[in-house]
Image 1 (cartoon, rainbow, N blue to C red):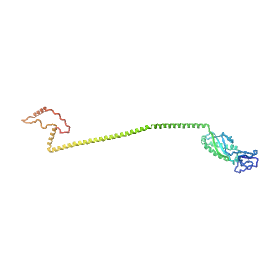
Image 2 (image 1 turned 90 degrees about the vertical axis):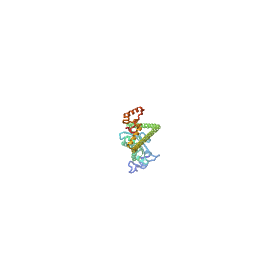
Image 3 (image 1 turned 180 degrees about the vertical axis):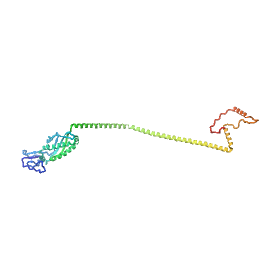
Length: 361
């Protein structure tokens, strides 16, 4: 609490050259006392002294529809600003300040009263800062970076009010009223985005449901799939076994045919060798016989043997003699014909294959 002395000792400034925004005097002199009165009751003649109350607790000032009990902010209204993209909008701000007890005389010496501090210092400082900062960004940027705007406002306002020996505790941005037409477009866009997300979520849910049903169906068919795979595996093994058996049978048949052909070849070679041996033996016998009896005798023996094999008579049944005392050749032929007619006919002799026996001369 600070009191101003009206009818006391003469005015005498004690601030020196460092404080040029007002005068402070000692207690009991005319002017703003450099030492404030502490909270409590004091004997003061209000006819000659004026007491200016300075709250030393935190003071909340609202640029909005709400008014605090101290009523310093009853004239403050929401701040109207214009953004970089030309849209105008309003925002509510709450400013928390604190005035220390030792700084109260300086504040009163500067501005005269707390209401003057609010009306002539804080109100233009806060409002102008937000108007200037809003012009650097768009409405949507201001809305999306609200926390950053608030921190920047606190730092700038704190530096500004320190010059008036006022401590800035915090700067808070309240409700923001952006343009209705802009918000409608943003709302419509947001609704469209949310609908798209909903559709995407539903589509993803459908895909997952189809995948679940597919996996469930596959799981239900797993037994049949295993049986089918086993059947295919068995069929493949049977086919391989049949192919192996066929190859074995073919190999066996080939071996048997080769063996039989070899046997025939050996048999034929043996027969040929036997025939060759027999022929060689006969030829050797013929050579030895010819050597023994001579060529003519051997030929005679062969003719006789051949005639004997064919049943031909070596001695004729009718002897024909020529001369006066014997029969003639014609008589001999007649006798031969008569003998052939009287004798029974013999079965015809089968023809010999070529190359067997002697040829008839």
